[in-house]
Length: 145
Image 1 (tube, rainbow, N blue to C red):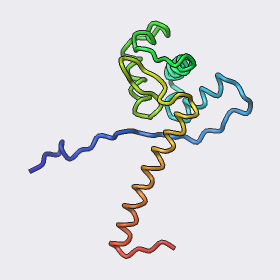
Image 2 (image 1 turned 90 degrees about the vertical axis):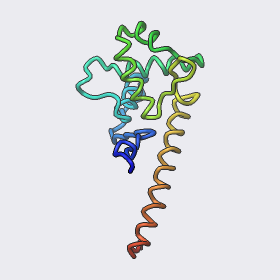
Image 3 (image 1 turned 180 degrees about the vertical axis):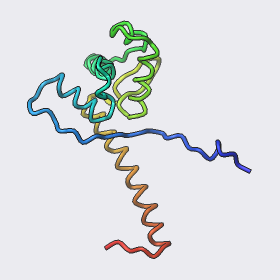
Image 4 (image 1 turned 45 degrees about the vertical axis):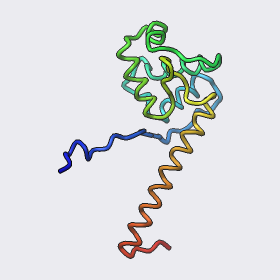
C-alpha cells in the first residue's frame, strides 16, 4: 500500500504571472518593480519592497556575470539571512533565480533570456496539459471543434 505522502507530488516550479498594466514610460526602477509584481514577488503589503530589492541586487550583479551569496545579499540590503532565503527560494521556484556554487544568480545571462526560458517552460507545461486533455476528451467522446 502506498502512503498518502508518497502520492503527493512536489511542484518542480510554480509560475505565477499577473496581468498588470506596464509602466507608461521607460524607467529602470519602475520597470524592474513591474516585473517583480508581474511574477507575483512584490505584494502591496511588502512596504519595504524586499523582493524587489533582492531581485534588483541580483540583476545588477548579473551585469558583471556574477552571483551573490545570501550573506552578501543580507549584508548589502540590511536584511536577515532568513528573510533573504525565504524570498530567494520563491524566486527559484518561480524560475527567475538559480542557486549555483553557493551563489544566487539570475537564471539566464540577461533578464530577457531569463524571461524567454520561463516562457519555454510554461509552453512545455501547456503542451503536456493539452496532450492529457486531448486523451481525456477522446476517452469520454468529447470533441473539440
